[in-house]
Each structure stands twice: as structure tokens, then as C-alpha cells.
Figure: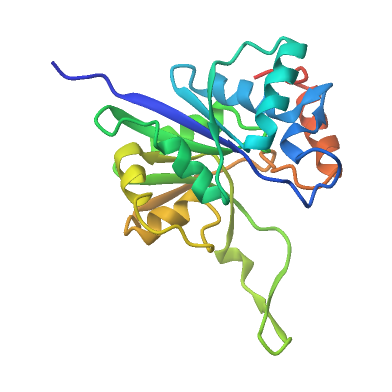
Length: 236
């Protein structure tokens, strides 16, 4: 009897968020009266309710997360909490250790500080996964860009050939597990980088969403709240 495949969403929220400033990492900053991460979890769960959510937190924030969830009665999304690593790539690898390669279907990896993911974009990702190793949401670059050379000089870049990469990125689960068996390099900034280094170069770009911003600076919260206001704050 063929065993049913199990899908996973890894939400990476173990970073320090140093660029954001403040007393807490950006994924715990206030959004509509509660930690931003709660909105992210609700929305990824709404995209694929049948998938198991693996939430990666730093060890130092696990107690805080448990307490704030109890204080706010946050029980709508069942998650398995995983201890993060020294880098984003290590944090993802820690989560993947909980995945059974014999039953895995697809695995999505999402930044905890991107609370604007929605089901429309997620549907494009799952549809695009057919026949390839992974799917990456991306948007066109609108700013003019320059490359800085070693001597301090710079030159312009043709932005029409460039795309800004977002998450969630969705992968064939077995291939993502295999890719994470290799060495994790400091140059890996996302999971597509890990896949490419392992030889899985058949990664497909699909349209992302300009609203799907990663909260990095304090002003980004106001932008996200504006986007959410039309939907009902914090709702999927």
C-alpha cells in the first residue's frame, strides 16, 4: 500500500534581527498588537493547512515565545519548535532532521519576518514545482544598481536581467534533504543556494508578490500594517 506523502513548512525565525534594532529580534516586534511572527504563522498555515509547520527559534527565545503565546492565547496554529543553529542554513538543517525522507512530499522554507505571504502566491509555487527540483518566488528589481569593484570604483548593472528573491521557496522534499547533507557555506543566503551547490540547478522562478516584504527596518512595520488593514489585521 502506497504511503501518503507528508508536506512541511519550515519557518525560520532564529535570527537576531540586528539591522532592525530594538530589544527584540524583528520577528517578535509588534504588529497589530502582537508579535509579527504570529501573523506569519497564521498565513503560512492558511496557505497549506495540511502541512506540518516546523518553527525554528534560537534557544534564548524559546521561553519568551512560549510565554507570549500563553499570554495572548495563541493556539490557532500547531507547530513543532526546533532549536536554531549558528546560521540560517544550519537552522534549516536542524528542522530537516525531523523530516522522514521515506514519506516526505514537498518542503517549503519561509522567513519568519515575511508576514504577507498569501495563498495565491503559494498556489503558483506548488503549481510550478511540477517537473523541477524547486520553485523560487521573485520580483523585478526597480532601483538602479551598481557593482562596487575591489578598487572602490563602480559600474552600472542591467537591472532587467535581475530579480529579487523572496520566500517561501518550495522544493522536492527528498532533494532538499539530500542537498543539506553537504557542507554549509557562509555564502548560502537562502535554500536555493544550497540546492544549486548540491547540483540541483533546475530551479524555477515564478512571480512573487511586491507586498511580500521582509521586515528589516522599523519603518517596514508601517508598510505591512497598511497592507493588512484591507484584509483585517493579522488574518490569513
